[in-house]
Amino acid sequence: MTGSELELVAGWLLDWGYAYSKSNPHTVASVAEVMAEVGVEEFVPLVEPHVATAMDALEGAGLIKDPVTSFGSRGMGLSIWLTEAGRREAATRIERRRDNLARRTGCRDTLLRWVYERDANGESTEIAEIATSPYGWFSGELYSAADLVEAVRFLRERRLLGGTDEAPTIEPAGTECVEQYSGVVEYLNRGDGGGVNVTILGDNKGQLAVANRDVAQNQTNTNEGQVLAIFAEALREFGRLLPEDQQSRYEMVASELEQEAAKDEPDKTWVRSLLDRGKGLLEGAPANLQHLAQVAKIGFELHGQGLI
Image (cartoon, rainbow, N blue to C red):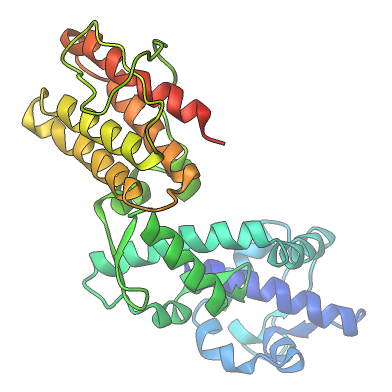
């Protein structure tokens, strides 16, 4: 998901060299000859500017043998001959393309990064255009339309992307994910560890009174949406006790909890992630508010554990 044309070309050369060697096991050919034999000559304009550097990188990694010029010039005339390590890497790439989990998670990561980069450059984010960039490929193979549709849906539901399915836009949470985390999975699973466990007892149909250190409340006889709405308001109420520049993170999680609360069937995986984020925020509360934070964490802790 680096968006590197050089990386894409190097991967293609491995793929094509491997395919060529399967039908021509004892023949050393130039890049141009290999591409013609494999039937990928339409990629020549993309490959030619990077071929010499890509071949040097592959040789340096021990994936191809020392390339020599086969007909008069460097570049497309360089020979491509895979080492055993190169053949293993090419075979691994083929297997990776068949890994649905790797492809789908990779598509989410690379799509988010692509929208982020396009937005930063003031460029269109029409999803069809990703195919013309290195971000549109997974181990040398284009992401399918189905891959992209699923990725957009997933990222929009998690509020990492906004806009429309055809032209998504980056959301603040998406920017945070790209800039501070290695991928979408790490971002959604982030959490700041455990804290004080407190038991909730009693009945409640109103706010979670975070300003009272002795309050203990219960959410039995209350449906999932009402519980999440109460947790959202509790987090928002706590955030208002903090300096203004710290309130937005609490407000973001509270708003996302409210959006799940409004659904007939909240996404339990996403709710659990939101509750973990809420707990993480409360764990980092100022020392003078820690006793209130512990009370506010009560519902987040137990409700999150109860989600299956």
